[in-house]
Image 1 (cartoon, rainbow, N blue to C red):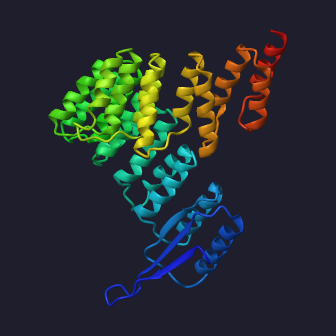
Image 2 (image 1 turned 60 degrees about the vertical axis):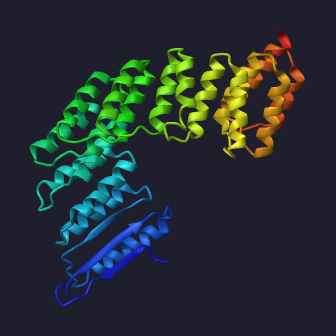
Image 3 (image 1 turned 90 degrees about the vertical axis):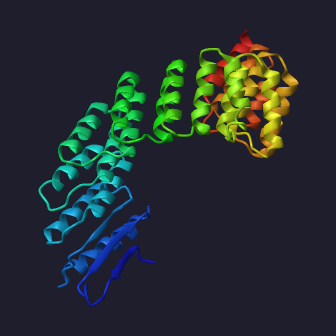
Length: 371
């Protein structure tokens, strides 16, 4: 089936409307090339579509997609902001942010006016590249050009600032946002998470207070971030209180909530409480993931509860839950320190995984053999 889709919109009012959509999500270069060839044949006809909606090839051929764009313009077709939005989104997804900026600058000389969606896409991509200053320059450009930032713009910028640890600037931006737009749960949760990861849980509580005052209801992500923050500053009881009040707050804990609780309890040497939560997950038909198992295995190993550890290993195997490098390192480290060569070799052989740290395994075995 060809990936070139032609749509004729025929009516008395728009009988000459011809919309061409070129969409390809294929990683098959032959198919993509066939579609480009088909489109080139259309360009050589006498058809002159006044509207052209263009979608970027997602086959990794960025240069080809850009040449394709240039050919369209050279043949006298006018792209709309949806077409440019698709192109810029594709470039940003493939981490070609600088090229996306160049395309944005090209639009300036055309009749197309970039919208807030296009700017948000590039602002987000700049943030992922940790080019926060460039993201804010683009934000300033939006305002100068009369393009009003929306909730997504501000949330993206807040997230960008939190990623690089600029929390004071993030608060200032939130205050600026509050002058014209009410932040949503994602905006507030992003900032709360940023403070909690830096150990600033009291600042996070201040943001939570503003959130509630604005009539925005915290969700599971908000409360899970606070739990993590309390564990980080060793206020275990406060973390437990938040988790235990989930139902009263009308919030259902998810796998990440349980993982944060189990990890925090294990780090606080409350392994029995962690095991109880693990069993609670099973009762709720919530499948633990590798992170859940790793937290428990690590603490049980350090507590000398070998039988419980092997029960969890067998359960992981039975459930088809994959080991990762962390699982390997925890188990091999424990076995090597106890000079248990037979079990170390058996483990490495039975659960050998391409991602395991081979050097670490060799060092462990050498340690076992030579003390």
